Image 1: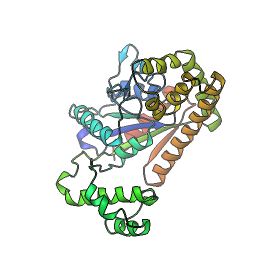
Image 2: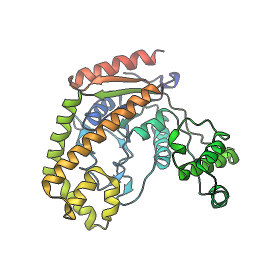
Image 3: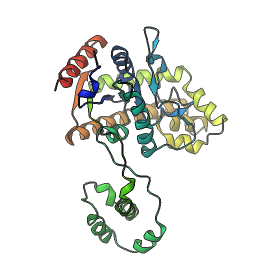
Image 4: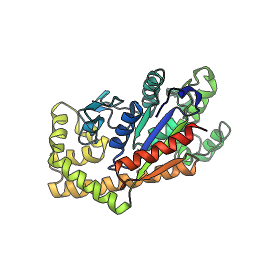
Length: 316
């Protein structure tokens, strides 16, 4: 596919998303090979160095016919540190701009719904410092009074902003900061993404998840978590990272036996997969178009479907 006239199209990103174990990375890498593109990861845990098997980095998938596909936002933070959406958005656009200036159409690939949402829906995020004076001034107010205050600053679309006093106060703090710091408004490029999702029947995806978990445990995932503990990453931090790191840490602390580790972790990953699917459905309800592709069809057919859709969209 020729993207020599890339600047003439309204689209500036391809996104490949899906639940865990859906085969997103391999598909994105083959597509990147076909389009001479580069991949920007959208995974909240693959940013950490030393967290490989547990986060499903599948680095080998980025090599296609002995050609290494360039990828970004993987292994950029030391394990043990905290990384958030605000940092991800800044890092994404730095990489996005570098790729795009070379007239390359970037491919974002991942399963972290919040990160993907923030990019394709152009979230406007600011790093808002705590306002101690404001907090002291309004902390005595009731939740209802705080709701009224917040409603005067913005439309209340997000119920979670006002489900507790602490959240409501923080939301007010953010809105007042934005109001008083208009000059800090983000100048990120507006994203117009063509989105593809890989989907499986629920029962098949469950089988894939369980099979992959067994393989990763056999291939040294417990040793990986133990190595992180030996390097000084605290058990509390690893538990905070969740899923594989949480349950394997509990196993290494002798709070779970091996069977309990496997069964509890397997259930937790299935539940996580369901939450990912729910998030993507919500994105669609909110107006994000996702072109779903059956995960069971052969890779070359997936690529053909994507190519056909890209050709049609690029002509619009």
